[in-house]
Amino acid sequence: MIHETAIVEEGVQLGEGTRIWHFAHIRKGVIIGKNGNIGKDVYIDFNVIIGDNCKIQNFASLYHGLTVGNDVFIGPHVCFTNDLYPRATIWTEERLVKTVVKDGASIGANSTIVAGVTIGRYAMVGAGSVVTKDIPDNALAYGNPAQIRGFVCDCGIKLVKKNTEKKFQVFICQQCGKEIKINNATSMESEA
Image (cartoon, rainbow, N blue to C red; front, top):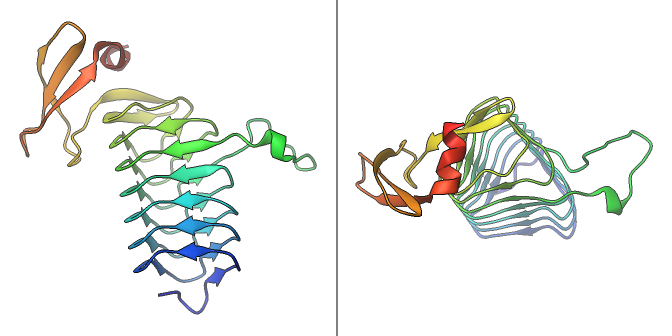
């Protein structure tokens, strides 16, 4: 389904079941997987790659150089940048800095993702955050700049520390019971 007010340029690949809503603009070369939901007024720049089952909320801006995995949630007004030193009159492909969002990650409303970071699998970025550094798998990060504040389960619930092993800390989800091992170096970042 593509709403009649949406602009989908030639050369876009849309997976089966993907819906594109009012006034969205999808540029040439974009690849969007199956069963996606692209909200009102979303802008997706040329050659962006988006996996299956992604939900991109209203007014999000996804710029060239971005790769998004499967099952990713991108909240309203999220903005991904692609140039660390932008100037209005200077742009070359050499200035492009790529960004990756891995499978299952969630990014809260009004967050800004600075070019060049990787957001890990099932990580969760809180609303209004400015992400300037990589966010590891299952990390809960928020603030300006975003910092690791804990860890979340794949189901989205904040994890509780169960015990510490030599190289890992073991966390458990009190909702689904899943245990997740987090590298001690990563978990120490959250205590800083």
